[in-house]
Image 1 (cartoon, rainbow, N blue to C red):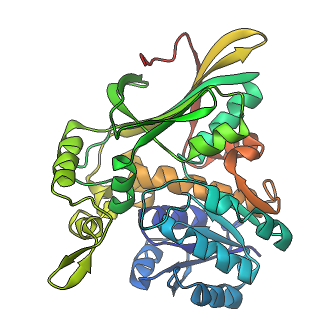
Image 2: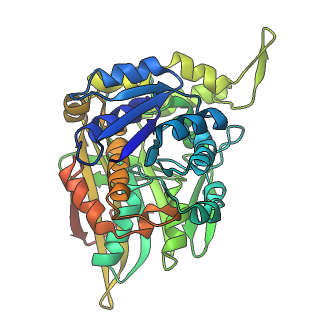
Length: 399
């Protein structure tokens, strides 16, 4: 019996729970835990089979350790906030439980996205005979696996990699974020970084713009260069890459609202005093913005996330593009969530499946691209995120 505990009852947690519940042969016993157990119970009520719920404060290592020791799960699927990653990893070590997450740790007091804190747990997990799989979402996650697949099957060497993430959907709200507003805005307002010739090059936030013609009728959209955590692990594990960049689409409406919010200080992460109470502006902003989980029934359109890789095969230059198209309304019909949560939650389930089936199982702390991509790619096609691979004559980018 493989019991799993899913921590986090937001949009992604809902998708992970739905997808795990669809595979009772892999996930016969599921516990959904959160600080707010009522949110867990609402998700549980949507499912075709019973699961259990629990209340736990994932920031409280002792409390979480006690829950894990009581339940003795095989695996914790962490879809809580990135600030909580290290606490949950500590509890897994205490209780002897394997670990998986979808986003790297970031300290609450600074928007800094690095794997160094979690990579430092390598020896601890190895000595404990436990595995920690980092970043099993889409980006990071599927994009890392795409890169490994390209290296295994398409290119002898990858020289240039562009990860391009488009949300061509529309939720009709004046301003809303498609996942946790606090995390989303911290990422978008941070300085950009890309890898070039063995070093990181920093850019001002959203200062580098290009256009990309997305496939299957989505068409041309403006894209903006950002820093995203998978770049750090990918260039480490594929050292022949000379340039690696991450791009994302944003509407002009989103950018204008964000500019105003920045200008009036509402995206700040340092506490300010208001009526004798310390308030973090971004956390207050999060409290008044639409909950991303409420956008599911409102959002129409599609997402397209993929990797454009340029390199050599048999001594000749070659460019390939591998991508997924995901429909917001189809996702809502299946799991009552929009495609942004779906594209993160499905890979979390598949990563957990890889571990529980011993297809990916090795003590230590690992990134997605360090394992054989083939079984994961096969499951993407089976469980809702089918991919397309095409050869291109150019990258489609001007910069």
